[in-house]
Length: 367
Image (cartoon, rainbow, N blue to C red):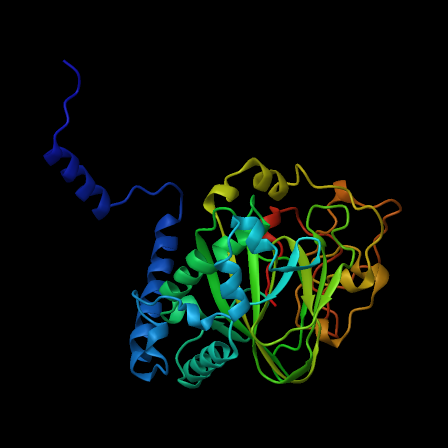
């Protein structure tokens, strides 16, 4: 005599729910409408750019990453025997948990640059790559998502699993985009961490001087703001690190630099205790010593003004300082003077402290 269910009744209920979804929160409909609008814009841009594509093999749901686009050493590493250990032996660990290695052939890099140039010259809408970079292109949004799904599955996932079995063992989504640095565009980028579990940073070209990458410690570690490595970009070469690794782009002094950035995430890791404890600062270590000057962030650090003076490059930046959290201050910690709100130089629009928010909402950028 229990409740009886029928296929007809189940399908009727499913049809009803799809017509009028039950919202779990106030304002959900507005968010649904917003994302629906973004999807319509994305679909329209993809359709409008289709006749202008320079390399059609990069686009569409059937696009797949070709092995011949990979550097010969990268192909050999992926095909090496011995599992993850054999693969990892082909990668240079230039700093603890920071790896540099050749990944793409120069012909592949040139092909991607040509396609990016073509899209940007089309006049079609181009979304900002992230909250910090002003110039570049989100490749997922112009029809290349399937291509980079394939790259993640066949190339990046095995590499990440070999080097970062916890954070990189189950990567299942990505945010793939190109950033540009040049005079009149972004010159460099403030110290930050990425909204990713594992980041792949590949230089695509062009001729440039300066524009190195300074690497510090992992967010939540005692050496978070201590310098560890400076990377020099080379066309086709990749730098791989955890998303929580603090890093910043040194200013470019000549030419233009174009890099492909792939932020990779895994749902299983993001549901893990390790990730959640770090995000909520339950496993956030106290800093062991004052920060190294190169590792300071105007955007994120409460004590920036104690060690450095804001300059013209900071005028367009908005400070949301939270580092270090009060529970993680180093011995003898002192804050510097706070900027005055709305100063005539345009630098600084908040005080020394910002309201506490989840770590994942705080730092985001790309190199």
